[in-house]
Image (cartoon, rainbow, N blue to C red; front, side, top):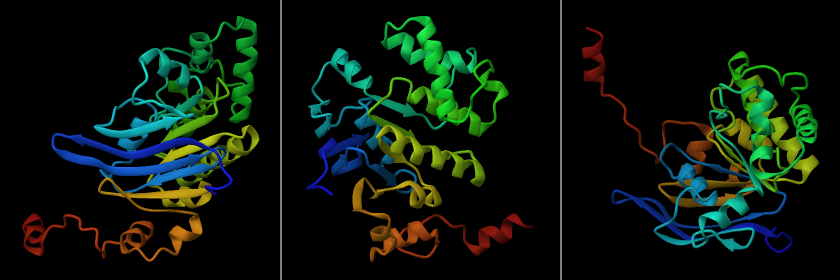
Length: 267
């Protein structure tokens, strides 16, 4: 893949510490144009921190992050704003403005970053709603929507400016399995129809194996392995097998109360 694909994101030796704790420890990664790359790992492994570096919310202690060929660790804020117009973001909570209608939420990027006529904006909003299966819902308030519908509105807003990349932060968080499958299908369909590069941060392995072209497994700030779904499923790494199978037994150790503690609770 590396020989045939253009890297739209490139990360070199990325290091980040918080309070002396190294959260990212020498990350090297490329994301290729048109692929869906999924970043997985347990809580605290650094996947959300990595995402925040890629979209320019955080600056590394050392290392470089290239977005569309530009080192965003060095560019100025106005230059970063220019790059931000080329990608969209679906936040974990959808991050909708509750005081605005669905239509007003989706139109925000168009009003902030373009000089389009209001009539054109309304047409484009309807198109985006149609793409996420919510035609006719533009007049509703976010409070009138289910969790899955809010995520789809957030996705419609993320594609409002026809981005080249969409970043997804835990897109299935808080959703039941059926709605999760609907959101996964949208991710797949949008990537195919719009030739969008997708970077997804999640811990939902069912989603991972539905949507991913490649998977990055993080553990304690390091990349354990990068590979296709088949390569990750068949990995010989014990940490990866424990994580994808969701088992307690394995090299990843978690807190478990001893028997005496449990007996004390039941008295």
